[in-house]
Image (cartoon, rainbow, N blue to C red; front, side, top):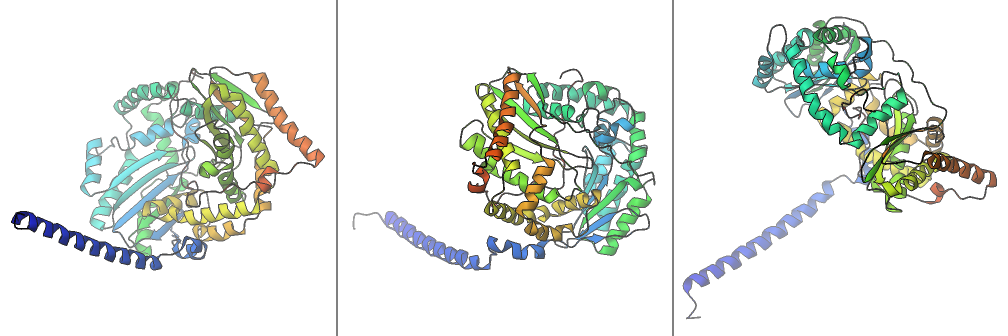
Length: 530
């Protein structure tokens, strides 16, 4: 020991002491961590406590008769305001022929200048009070959002500027030219992205002349036809009081929220409510469309026109879709295409519920050599899912997963306000969020199966395929064989339904598709490209 330097001995003592302290701290932290577990609510009890967490929604009755919903959220000094107009891209043609993309362009240019303020002054006003302003167009909706501090000194100037923009936007030619120049870049990217192109072709093929047929952002040719007068006419016709519902969430009292509603409604022109959209025409047979596309992968989307958001079968169809195509790798579609056969990296299915009947679709990509085999498997999976009974245990698992995930829909002020916007726009009851758990729990296998068989038809699908080549005759035969095989099974009564005995275990933590937004991806494409 006499030969060991004093500095080394000191260092060793320091290290040993620090290590001992670290062990003690780790033990203490572990004890605290495990003791805190008892305070957590078990996921198994989420059904019992879900009602306690759903926010209370106030219906704000106002003298202007604008449907207005409010949730008080005192934890943050913030206010979220959403104005939802019945003015999506489905209304573009009502202003003039071949003006696809009109509502989307209005959403992009709304804050680009008014009669009294330049674009920079508008931006500076919002920034000076810490407010966030945004506008977006969908097929059904035109949405204006404002997030600001609840302090009246911040909220009032932000709201005044929002109303200024809504009432007096000028839509100058210089701003339109900027949108057109940006389009060229998006057009090039689109042609290199078959996943986006197939959605556009799918909607066009499915809806024909219906207002839902064209992409939200229009086409290269259509947006070149749009002028400032068209945009002003769109604003004057659709961004009006009678075509609006209001959602407010934040640190306000009910009377304060009502005051905001009255101010917004008062300072918008009264106008008229948009007329109902026409019902789309339904097919009675297969419609196969092949788009030659040179790639190592083939891209497929198939589906049909299904139903509207206000359909009583809405919740049953959401459950069905989660079982079939949105339950992760363990959904039926992914199991058949990926897990069992390795034909794709991922497959999905979805319903788009809108004012007029929206589509059901399923899609995936696969190697060119596997194209026909994958189509056979995907279509057969859909046929079996529609016609065979749903496993009771599978249904209960699915419902439990959806119940556990539903609080994500009101986990933040923004999420709550988006739900309020959807509830108001589609005319849902004020207590929708509170009733959700009970209605989901009460769903039976018979109800889900009846909804599937009512709205899904494996013999009348529109099928869009981007690939180098396609043997259409062979594909038609495959589709007919799938239909005939099941008919023969029904006659013989000797088959055992695969869905009845095979249980797919869905991930319990996955959230259902949000109810608030329409998930069509805007994209541009020329009128003659496809």
